[in-house]
Image (cartoon, rainbow, N blue to C red; front, side, top):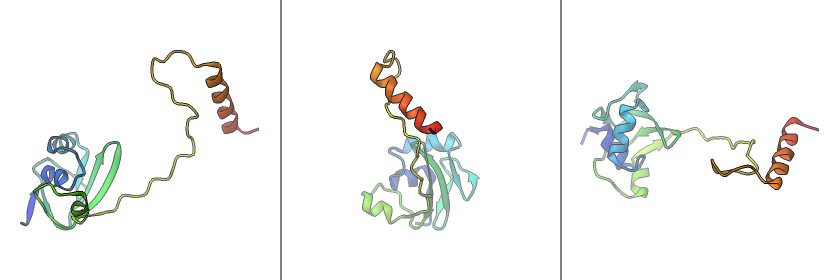
Length: 123
């Protein structure tokens, strides 16, 4: 097999959970093949470079093998080379996360937030 549809390949190598998710990402402009916007039916060949934003994370992969059927994770990882840059851990981590609509912070939450803000601005 020389080529396959982009949405089918993204689903087959487990970059997206469903084929419809892959197609929606393509239609939304979140997928590029060789730095060109791609539609779900764009053919994918060996050597193509795919840049996709999946789950709020940008993945950059190079196609090594073209497949059409979904395979297990170990076999899927052999179908592409992952060139995604490693994200540096964020040094600004919120002290306490609060659910939206949870009401006002407690006195303890307020103290933790104040302490955290003092640490960011310095002594």
